[in-house]
Amino acid sequence: METILQRLTDLEEVHDAILVGKDGLIVSGILHSEDEEVIGAMAAAAFGSIGDLTAQVHNSEARHVIVETKTGTIQMEEAGDLILIVTTQGAGNLGRVRVEMKKACRQLIQLVASY
Image (cartoon, rainbow, N blue to C red):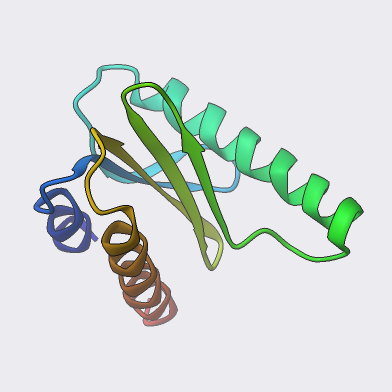
């Protein structure tokens, strides 16, 4: 898991990559913050709430969430029973980040299924 997350943080745009359970508990992460438990819990809660919203509005589940801030983005994507959270800084190539996140999620799902 660390290798998959490291490949994401090797991208110029990516600052942090963290993998959490839907309960908010940290599974693995490369984070430049000491508040990783808080970030994991808040991200899982936000992703769950957005999933509830999309289910109500579009009768469908959320797949990928992008939150734009003044300094970058927070992107979240479901990876089976886990959530991959990636933060970026600056403007960078967000499409590339999204493609790499999708690839990482497929790899993580396969990795978890092999346990």
